[in-house]
Image (tube, rainbow, N blue to C red):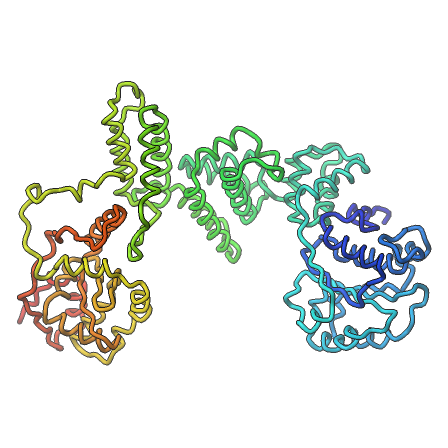
Length: 638
């Protein structure tokens, strides 16, 4: 066979031709010039980055007639003989197929013999991590104290699999992945010598697909040249790599952004019919969203692929915010993990597309789309002249606000209620006629969006409230104030970590039912002697706050945590409103905060009520019904 692959034809013959490993070549050249060559080296790094190539160059340099020299001359008989393999004093061993103890013992026996032609006998062991444990042990002593005429060069892509006893006997050099720009320079050198007609964007794409390996890049160039010998376009490169074209990626991303799932799935079907793999489609989309994210936050730089220097890509980057991009990446990453082990990979990518374009109220995709639209509308409001001054003052005020209380945890993801409130506030400003909007109305609208003024729910007077039942005996707000003002995060974490033990005490009958019911709640705040636990149902809270039940639960809590702890059970939505009020007042710089009384049409004063213990004969169905529906259950005696 007369043809020689490009990566073999253009393999570097001296250190100056090696791409992307300057930190290694400089060290070795200095060592060669000063006669400080070690007896054993360990070259580790990704595939195709020059480990074996530099090993052969080092073998030529130490045996060159001109030695000591920083680079082999490549004209003397020694260099030429090592280059073409005719000198058998440089031995290349593939440890993947020669990984037994017997092979290593044979090497150990032969190292004592002097080289036959050159000064040093060099053993280059490729993929050394494939050696067995016995083989490594057989190599240890020889590797530590080899004869003066022997040098070992061990190469591996997985250094973590090599015993530390081998590491300590070698000088280790870590090869890095070659950057796309360095690969591109080398590709252009080969292209010029081979007179290949290729599109510049195609060269950049090859450099990206090579993933840091120059050998892989030259292999792809060779394959593309065979596929299209007259002219290589970027579509040709995508075709041989099984990757998506840039225009197809843009179309899919635009369809997902517009919540058009049918078009996105249709494009995917067309790709599958043309021979693309589902896993490759998913990985390309992950890379594309990643590139949008980098462009949004970094902008164009030298490493930005040329296909991204166009208007459609810029528009996408300006339209999609970071949170929505992270949502897309999270969905696709989970799909990629499922695709890897599935017999039906297409199913998971289709489900990912549907999740990313789900328009049902409350879905993640709908929330992020609405939030994204609101951000764009707010930017339009901010661009009006009368709002600019308000924005500046708002930012200054926010930077002066104290940090949140350690017990208050705010979520980044907006709820549907938050979005509706912001949307209604934004609509108060007529964007089509900014000159007709009065200054006061703009200011009030903007302040509503940024939550600077006191929320209306905290400014409501007692006269405006309808008459509510008195809950202070059971749901005393002073209890909540004490817990939140004296919150102890360490104690809260301790209780949460041991919460599961509540129902594991030696309990029986009704006590066990109450413990299981209490354990289903969520501990939201603790001040060592008191704690607040939330439940979805107000009926459950009423039941757990009855004095007879509290006596039982206080005993269970004391047995579990070895101390007396008072508790208050609150509905989740009630506590959320309380914590919002507390957070607002804390941001205003207030301490020892006093909160509004607890008001709810579902809660009731149960301080005078007693709990009737359910007879043991009622059975599991009745007790489960009580746990689920609380006070709504009525037992009819036969």
